[in-house]
Length: 275
Ligand code: S0N
Image 1 (cartoon, rainbow, N blue to C red):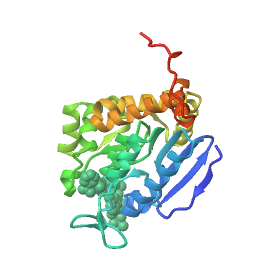
Image 2: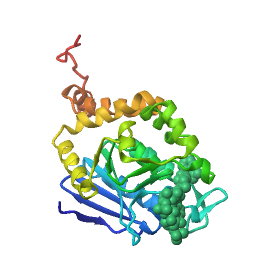
Image 3: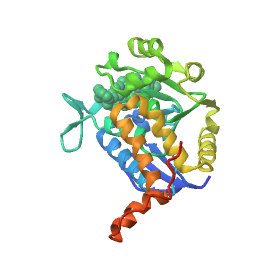
Image 4: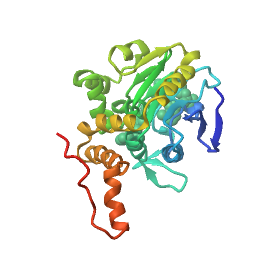
């Protein structure tokens, strides 16, 4: 696979190729922990991918290995710059901007696949949870740490996790803060597939290519449909937005707009009231 550099960032790498974008957290010396700048850059990359009509799939991964030979997808918020009210940015402002990123990953009308090698821990674990799909390398390690390190994600990190693995398992993950290997994650339905680490990116790319052969409108409608039941009015807004998009694309929808522009009464008589 030939990736093209899509934009220069400081904390992440951003590539594109064959309709697939790849966002790589690039702070291996901190097990790819995110600071506000990292999250802001990821947000900008995801926005770019959303706006690019040639992109249908986004791979989210972590750079590695570090010089000590260890891999990480992401180890969550950077504890070394955590202040009284969140993670302190370069201007001294405390932020929890990863919550905005979680929402963007969840609502972006494209498929987001987490490629996890090494640690997916804390807020890094939540990031893979909110992705549409997760492919794990055989060295992947999953877990939450919040109650050990003085934080918790009671939003998607708890409620959506429980939808995936069930209430009992989600409570175990959060209350005990244990670490789980790739096979255990597979057993609890937390990941879609486990592959040898040297095949992780190729596998993710292959999944992306298969998705790119499918209908974009069908995939975006399905994503919003999967979200709708869980996301309340915002979920219905997304699902209904897709219905409006499809209506705009229809001749019947265009008739209303054309009649207005042409200053005439719309003629919907040729469109059937289907059963
Ligand atoms: C990942 C772990 C298990 C790896 O262990 P290992 O292999 O033994 O490596 P270490 O020696 O521990 O680490 C290597 C170097 O990397 C640094 N480092 C690792 N993780 C972090 C981190 N998260 N922040 C800063 N630095 C990190 C180490 O310090 C070490 O560097 P040196 O040797 O130079 O000191 C292990 O490292 C581990 O357990 N890490 C911490 C994981 C963790 O607790 N993460 C934070 C959990 N909380 C969140 O993510 C909050 C998320 C969030 O933003 C949020 C969302 C919703 C609502 C609230 C919040 C909120 O902020 O509270």
